[in-house]
Image 1 (cartoon, rainbow, N blue to C red):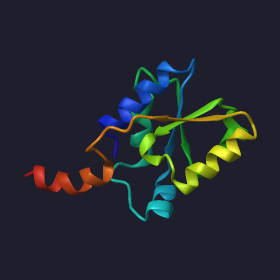
Image 2: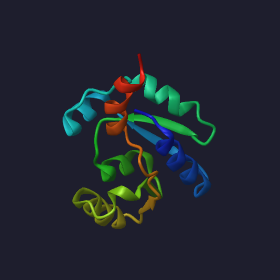
Image 3: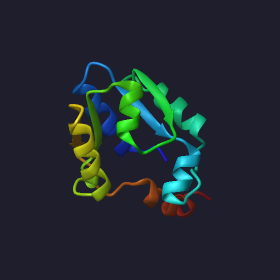
Image 4: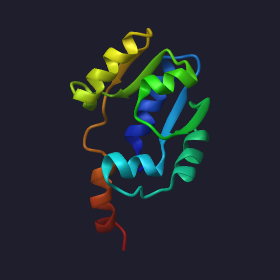
Length: 127
C-alpha cells in the first residue's frame, strides 16, 4: 500500500540520479514472498507511481532478484529504505550487485509508517 514513506524514498532517490525507474512488485510476487494479497492491485499501484513527477519509468516486476532485473534494465543503483540494512537478503543483494558495479543505497526510512501498520489502522479509522 503506497504511503508517505514510499513517496519520501522515491523523491530522495530521484534527487540522486538522472533517471529513476521504479519497480512495482506484481500481485503474484507479493503473495509469494509476503503471503499477503495486496490491498491495491498491481495495475493501480503502477499507475500511481507512473504519475509521480519524480518517476521517469515504472515497471511491474515478478522477481526479487535484482541481478536478474539488472540484466534487463542496466541500472547503476538500487534505492531501498534503511530499515532493510543488515537484512540477509539485502546483504546478499549488495554482494551480487557489486559484481556488476551497482550500488545499493539505503535511504532514511520514515518512522512509524508501513503498509503493514496501515492494514491494521485503516479499519479502525474508516467508518
